[in-house]
Every structure is written in C-alpha cells, then in structure tokens.
Length: 103
Image (cartoon, rainbow, N blue to C red):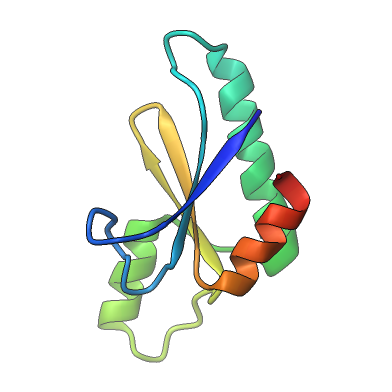
C-alpha cells in the first residue's frame, strides 16, 4: 500500500498542533478494503511501537484544551472517518521517520 504525507493547513482539524497528515492512497471502490485497512492498522501499529501509545485526534485535542497537566503523546495521533483513517504527525522529525520507513 502506498501512503501520502501532506503538510496540514486550515482544512485539517488540529493543524495548529500537527504539521503532517498521512493517509493511504486509493479509492475504496476500486481497492480491496481489507488490504487498505490492514495497511492503515500496520501504520498505526508502527507509530505506536515507535513513539508509544496515542489516541484519536479529537480526544487528543479535547484533553489538550481542558487538561493543562496532560500526559498526551507529543508525537502522533490518528483520526478515523468513514472508511478512512489518517495519521497525524506533530513535527518534521516524525515526518522524516515516516518517510524513511514507508516511502
């Protein structure tokens, strides 16, 4: 599976906190959904192993806003939408690790 990494902007919720967004390429109608989901799960497992546990982006942003003494993972989180999961990476450092491993 191929992934695309893009710099976040105002179209992305959380762009103030995360500089990069990773998503799997392909059209759900033309590709095997199980293969695409498996690739995304593999990517999320890699991030979990590399930087430690994290959570959904919306939970991450909520905790950041309402709990100043948070212990959130400072490297990554993910976001699940209808038939699509995106990985959000905090800085260029994490983006470079991703590129070394997956591209």
